[in-house]
Length: 326
Image (cartoon, rainbow, N blue to C red; front, side, top):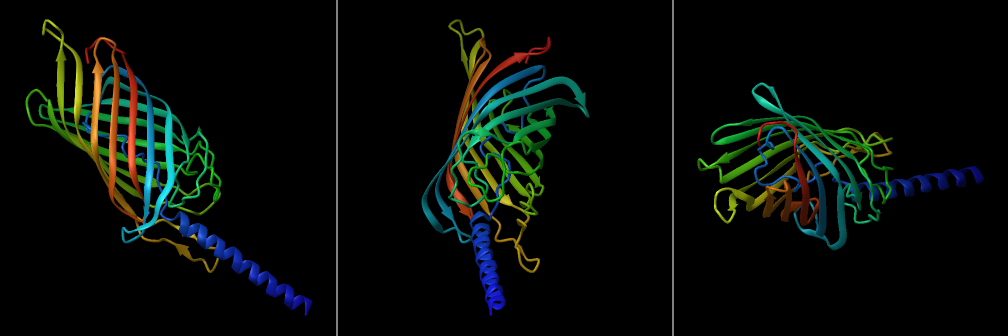
């Protein structure tokens, strides 16, 4: 009797654990990737001028207003979930040519709070070192009426991660990403432009698990106008303003893979997607070589993920690394 009672107790315990795991898995499916939407906007298909080194400080703020289900309906209203990212980044463009393109590279060392890993509203993380973003290869081409850019970037899992934890600062996986884009100019002075940048993210397995986030496709860009502010004598510009409407789209291309602790089953769930529209303004002060940029995007049409608002503030200083004028 005691042996049979013990067996029943173990079965009940196993079922309880399984149910808890299922609730946890379903609460966290769909899983997010490392690509930060809103990081690119106007002239997203244009590389910076050659022989320049930019040191920048980004401020990313995302506020979720609702959680949407697989039909796009609200499953959780006002989840009271905000995410913040900041850090220090460097972006360098050389005068070295590859296939007729100018070579560049960049890196971002960042800190994040409330790192969103999936559709889980139970997140409570303070500001901590997060995953590292590195672009070892960026190629830029400049034509009379169009610019083109291609890049490879990777996300290193340097942030804290433990499966099931609510205070992770990273995603616990290595991520590869390839991007290609263009900026089209509608006049000879290149002051009226439209851009788009497509990025495809391939994700590895999460630390100490067989959980794998699906591949993610993102589009970012915008329609803008460049304005030159001249000095009192109107002989030379003293600052440049770039403003316009921006957008982003993101789609989960392949399903997440979340192994379940029974029968070798794997939870995939429905893929997620989201779109956003907003505005951007950038100000470049030429004599000080300093810039400030602000983006706001409001999300629409979210399916199986959070929907909210994205704010992106960037401060940067540009150094010349050569004799050519940018």
